[in-house]
Length: 203
Ligand code: ATP
Ligand code: MG
Image (cartoon, rainbow, N blue to C red; front, side, top):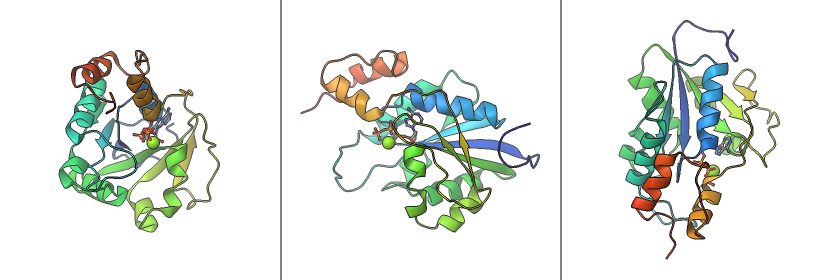
């Protein structure tokens, strides 16, 4: 019996949004574990659009983040990557992502997968009521972040324990900038792509 809301018999599509700068094994393990526990047919990774104004943190080009996500997921027949947030441009709002995926995928139940850190911000997101009508939310554990029930709508969120991987993109970028290895923190192809494109090398 799959975790979460009772099956409606529809196709079950997981949605993993993120900056993926770079994608790492924490993302992949979380998606894999949720796909198994919730009996998802597929998980689509959706790299965010490029913030149009410079924020505190510099984000790599959308095309690099997209390609790293493709490289990391290509071998898994259940994983795919969507360009919808990149093509829309500007900052990504999860309602826009989910509305577009709903329109692109008729007769499909959407399951939005998010880490404990991001889940904590859900209540501050815009259009919260609509969000929960678009998808079931799955909050996954993440080392360093507590996964407490944030008092979200009844039945709208399921909290899931995934094998803890203390990996973050921020740490991966810092390691590359310092000349430290990221082997086995990110997929091999992503290690090579980072080197090829000279990403995260700093100024
Ligand atoms: P950054 O350090 O740049 O914020 P990140 O590692 O948090 O990067 P994101 O692209 O921001 O990666 O994360 C996308 C989604 O994956 C978020 O919902 C985040 O909570 C979740 N996530 C990231 N790392 C992990 C991890 N190690 N375990 C579980 N979930 C994770
Ligand atoms: Mg993050």
